[in-house]
Structures are given as C-alpha cells and as structure tokens.
Amino acid sequence: MRLSEYIYSTISSIRGPLLFVEKVFNARVGEVVRIRFPEGKEMEGEVLKIDGDTVLIQAYGETRGLDTGNSSVVFTDSVKRAPLSPDVIGRVFSGSYAPIDGAPMFVPEKWVPVTGYPINPASRARPEEFIETGFSCIDGLNTLVKGQKLPIFSSAGLPSKEVAAVILKNSRLGSETGGFVVVFVAVGLTYYDYSFYTRVLEEMRTGFVAFANMADEPVVERLLAPRFGLTVAEYLAFEKGMDVLVVITDMTNYCDALREVSTAREELPGRRGYPGYMYSDLASLYERAGRIKGMTGSVTMLPVVTMPEDDITHPIPDLTGYITEGQLVLSRDLHQKGIFPPMDVLPSLSRLMQSGIGKGHTREDHRKTANLLYKYYAKGRDLRRLEAIVGRDGMAEADRFMLDFADSFEKEFVSQGVVRRNIQETLDTGLNLLRRFSLT
Image 1 (cartoon, helix red, strand yellow):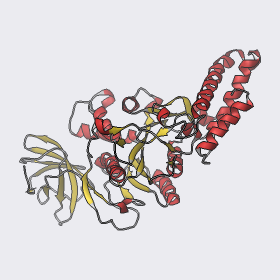
Image 2 (cartoon, one colour; image 1 turned 30 degrees about the horizontal axis):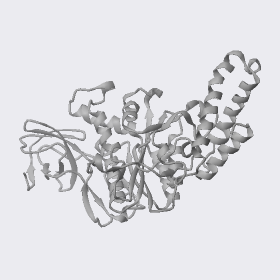
Image 3 (spheres, one colour; image 1 turned 90 degrees about the vertical axis):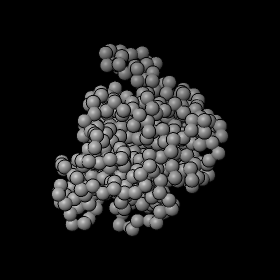
Image 4 (cartoon, helix red, strand yellow; image 1 turned 180 degrees about the vertical axis):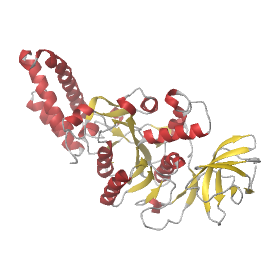
C-alpha cells in the first residue's frame, strides 16, 4: 500500500479538462490528484482511466494556464472525502463542496469518503412513518415514508422545478419527534434555475443543506454533488439522529455527465450511448436511502428525473423505476389545464405507502379514503374516452356523474397551488368531495 505522495511532471497532453500523464505507476481509478500550475497554484482532479502506465485525469476546474513542460500532478493515494460537522446545516455549497453563500468554511468534525458505507441488508429497518410534503396528491394517495426512495418523473416544459421548490419549503415530519432537515442537490443548473432556487433557499433560512452544480462547471462535479449531499445526509441521519429528506434535481443531467465521462474513458456504450454500468451507478446512490435498526435517524430520497422525449421507457427512468419504490408522475394534460401540481395519480405509486399511513401514523380512515378517491377517479378518467366518441349528451346519467367527479377531483384535490395542506386537511378535502357526490 502506497502511503506517500508521488509527483509527476510527465503530462503528455491536455485536452480541455482532461490531462494525460505518462510513466505513472501504482495509481488507482478514483484517486484524488492535485494539479500544479507553472505559477504555483493548485487544482484538484480525479483519475478516470488507467491504460498501462498512462493515466487519464479529469480536472475540477479551468485548465487554462497549464502546459506540458512546467506543470505537474501530485498523486495523493486517497479518494474524495467530505468534511462533516453539524455546522453544515443552513449552508450552500458548490458541486465540489466549496462555500458559495458568502460565509467561511466550517471547521470539520471529521472527513468521510463520499462513496459512503453500504448498509447491511440485515440491518435495514422497515420504512415507516410518513413525511408530509404538503401536497395532497402525495400525502393522501402516494404517501412518502421515512427511509423510502420515491422519484418524480417529469418531462420537458413541466414545472418540476416549482414542484421541487414547494416540497423543499413545505416538507416536515408527520410526527413532531426528532429533528428534520432537507438536503437539496441541484445538478447541471442554468443561471436562471440557480437564481430561482437561491430565492427558495433564502425563504427557508434554516433546516437545509444545499449543493448547486452549474451547467458550465466541470462534468465530474455533476457526479460528485449527489455523493457529497448523500454523505452529509448519512452523517446527519445515522450519527446525529436526524430524519433527512434528500431532493436531487435533475438525475437526467447526472446520467448525461456519466455518459460523457464514460465516453472520455473510451468505454463501450450501452443503451442510447449510456454506459452499461449505469444501473449499478444509480443504485449506489439510491440505495443509500433507508433506516438502520437501533438508530433513530433516516435518509429519504426524492430524485427528480426529466424523461427525454416524454419516454418513460428511456434508460434513465426505466432503471430508476427498477431501483426505487414507486414513482410520482407529472402530467402534461393536467399542466395544460392549469392544475398545480400537475401530478397524475393513476400511474403514480408509492409501494411503501401502507407502512406509513393509518392508525398510529396518519388517521384511521386514510386507507379507505385513498382507495375510494382512486377508484372513482379512475372510473371518471376511463369514461373520458367514451365522452370523446359519443359526446357528453350521449352518455348515461351515472357516467356523466363520474365525469363530474373526475373534474372536481382534479380541481379541488389535486390542484392546490403553492398553498400547503397538512394531512388532516388533505383527508378532509377528500372526504368532503366524496360526501358531496354521495360516494362514501
């Protein structure tokens, strides 16, 4: 095992953020390096590929000013680590964990590898107890449970950014026990989106940790930002006993970065050009959510996935669906009707919902209310196809009744704007709707 640093001045080629270093021995993929400029400043990088004694390095920044004759690379024999402390709460960092909120860096309590530590399946506790998002369509019909990973499937042009912002501001524990914090990770942001989320975080003031990676920053930062966020989440959950909700947007940008790095490594592409190991890479992130027996904290994950070309069978949503426990699907039809959040409850699903609702969690009538709302809304939605053929006047009175219920359900239960509803208000809204149509 190598315990000392080695300095190489054998850079053979510099191609944008990529450096090729020759005559290197005993390096490893993922190793952190320090790149020294001729004028003396340093920048971090990471080993992407090793081909014989030639190493491919990705720089974490602008390589302008480097040259092959007077620059050098220091191999540190260490992997990327994250500084951790309770003082991380309320702070905003870049994708490389540099403070961007104007405050100085906190004094770390410890340093931990960003890859995290796998949770022993035998030590996993069953997800239970719901997390209240403030959205009726989630809390009432697709309840988010502590320790769950539940992705939001969106499409281009849909307000996933606004949905994520409301969840950031309104989420809280269903019970008042224990601490709660939101870890927000934004990957591949435009400056417009960054300005939007900055205003959201200013309104939150505290109870969050944020990592923001811009679209024009090094591609490797897009791969690091979620890992930094999850490392912080694990620390707060399993060492500080807090319940942590991790919101990551957008996983499509993350996967595109993964494809770009894979191309730089000259690896054989898989489906749609994405690397064949994308499934295991996504699993290494998603599976960091959970609860551990004997520990009070939990990590719950809400990743946002923008489906390319509205295609739910695209590799990114497809693989995400395999790994996670359900999905929340945003609808273009509901969005065009002016409904916010435009969440389609029929294809949406929370597989762990039953563990977090009912007596002792939400309310005893939660299951019955949710089942009735889903049942009658599904009937009304199905009858809309018949209405498109024969017209409303050609339908039976009972069918028109179901159509009216479906319309009222979307306008009164699903659509709520940015106004927060607690679980009692959500269930009361659903019950009042059912009673008005005499469906209880």
